[in-house]
Length: 253
Image 1 (spheres, rainbow, N blue to C red):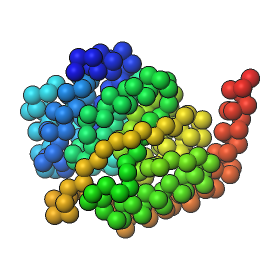
Image 2 (image 1 turned 90 degrees about the vertical axis):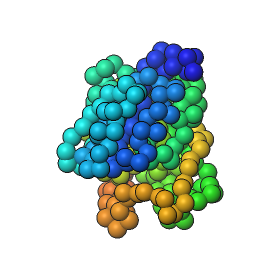
Image 3 (image 1 turned 180 degrees about the vertical axis):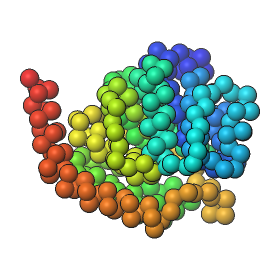
């Protein structure tokens, strides 16, 4: 794995793993990522199940960022971005700590970003994976539709958390959201900045229903996402589309 480690270092790529109460899986995720990458940030977003202690006891050297109370995935990601920028990283790969993502997809992110500097890469899951919850398929199609309305761009999967963010290109983007919907906000606002968004195929593991751990709250989180989509539809007309056009004109000049 030395070649991929060197490649990630040369490209300025780190891995950020946001985690809440994932004591059952976080150690395994860290170890699998370390097979490919030496520069790992684990953001402990107010866990109460001993996750922090497990991360600190891990044999893998990681940068641990912790705080209380739980503030949401969006805050965890932005906190990780801030730390990565302080240490001079150009890109950050993000993946979930519940064991859903496969670390051996990291080389595909590295290869694609080397060919497309400063793009935002987003993992693309097949919507017919075994054990994929039906509600996930519906939510993804719903999110894909509104993303296209708001940006005039099409993506096959707008909800996966397995991504590569161009930290310098995004700048110090100040989010108006802090939880799951923040990933949608970053995607839409990056599109408005004319940052190329490139989907790449990834594998995904969905455990059987009885083993599945999810902190997504269908009622509250779906409501927040719906409100955000409504806001972005208006914002797209007043700011998003004009901004994309102006940036495109200046880029041509």
